[in-house]
Length: 478
Image 1: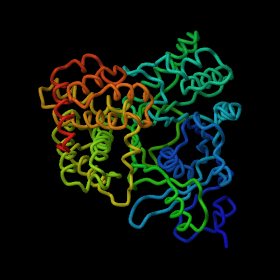
Image 2: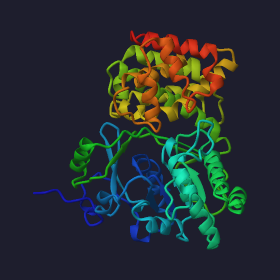
Image 3: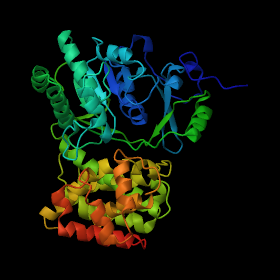
Image 4: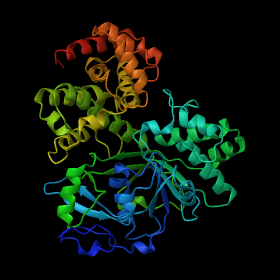
């Protein structure tokens, strides 16, 4: 007998112990439009909103996908229901109903625009990863980035995030609709201010100076920090979930039990009451953001590039490597922590201890290959900025240069393979010009101005420390 498909019809037939939406989905309005409805959004943001809908049905989520060519059939066939598995022992399963629709912007631009123009839409959220913002190495809008350049030529349908946001905001202004809050939820330093400036710059570059001034004066772009380790979904997860809930789910997601959402406290009137479901509102998102980017995300990247070279496949495996685990803990406590400052609600030593416990969770199979993607976008925030801070403070930089060197070796060793990175062709060209000589190879990589600002690349202490680490890693020395 075949297992029934997860859907609105089968929701109340699921196995005992599976949490289901305790609200009337028919009463939910699409108050949020989300760009980038991937696994992280489905596991993190949607779980907060699912809890909020119990008290306030105005905040359903309409997703807009910028990359996929077609609508996600597996979600539509399930009435946009899916299972969130929290990776405890035993695992907890919860069916989320916050997602109302997903429109593929390329295939269904009118449907995407209709969501953005819905009078009930008061919050636009974003998780498109660092590369989705079209920024250059300085964090400014790159008008030569292909999608941005295409949109500046005024095609009928935008391709870039900033193109869509500018279109949505200006159209809502013309229609005299309420202003939405635009909220980045990506691992990008100063994500709100950077997205705000990118949209303003795009409007100006497209000749809409009046719109640029209006966006600058009227639209809120709060900064945020989001945190929850979310391993990629795979067939094994689908099989486990379908068995656990008693229905076939082709779109499950998984994450660790911990989930944090820190939001700049400037949302104004008309915003959802996210604090009521556990989000933290603060005037100092930057302190939380910097701690998370450098301690969690930086440690993840260090484990990925060093761990892969030592034959590990997941974060849990890498943390069972005693030498590597000692290395990252010393990096966190002795090198990264001094570049951070504590604020109310954030004790840095306690935060590090909690992170180390999360990294050792045996139920979380977070693949190092997933973390290793898009290294060119991640290195500046996770390592280069704290290295610069250490130099200014007169502190040692050697240990923090090791993951940078490990990334270089990662790219060099894959010089003839496909790389998952927005500047993959440039990285491979640099790697293919390498010889294996540490000084030569490091010098080639430091020429990549998209990653390494010239002043930093030319700093003798940084070049020497990376070169030593590059040589040591050849012999598995950390």
